[in-house]
Image 1 (cartoon, rainbow, N blue to C red):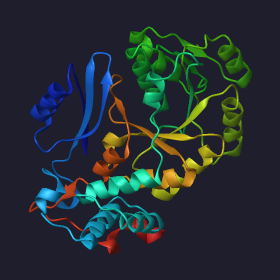
Image 2 (image 1 turned 120 degrees about the vertical axis):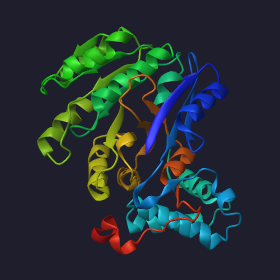
Image 3 (image 1 turned 90 degrees about the vertical axis):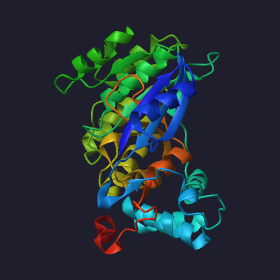
Image 4 (image 1 turned 30 degrees about the horizontal axis):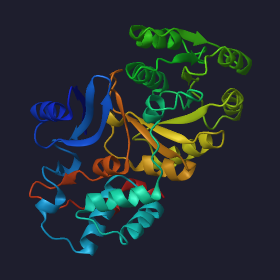
Length: 345
């Protein structure tokens, strides 16, 4: 899957650029307004595993008529392709039977809308009421999931919409992390503040103008290490932070569910998904959401700081889950006997 973000003075111009660079097979998975115009994020998959192809046209046009059982089977096979565990797969397909929509993608989108919560942190940063305290965001996650890069992306986004934040890091142990964050945020005129304990974080927060957002990048934490989690819990409990779990896509669904559950027990309410540009199967996203009871927030789609992430909603998630057909337009069904994720759950 190839994802790319385009910006232009108008959404029409952004779409024209998208089609020129990515072709007619590209689909928009998210759009938003920015200070300088419109921003859209598109996805395209020229050739996927098993010879699958991304839809050039809506499923409705490829296969003119659908019986309900055909729609449900298409959704079921798409979820199988992504390694969704049977318990969640059965839940989603059962809910889909109660929905009438013009094609399977929209049926799945309606199901996801009813089953999950979507609450983008990017919107929270750009549209908060300035008559009350500005957002205070604390990012938590396992080592290597891209928290530091996401911190810079959130800071860039807030700056671009006129709400330049303070950025604090508590990651003082990993070599080069502070220097990396300084380099990533330098062009936005943001000074990185540093502390390694809860008292220091409280002191820095108390110095804050209530109208200035705060973004905190914490150390990568092993969710299965009680000592590390207790340290993170102590830091996260200071002040009134919106705690965000940063979860990398493409990992084992069961393992990811346990990671999400661990961070939710110390206060995470939303989940940002990273490394989506290096991932084909998204089953771990759904298992993490269920296990941690987390709202789906945003997706990180590239290493670029500006426009490197976008908000997630039910339609864009459904499009990411269901973009594949065979070259002749028919749906490619997954062989359940070879689905390794299903075999171990």
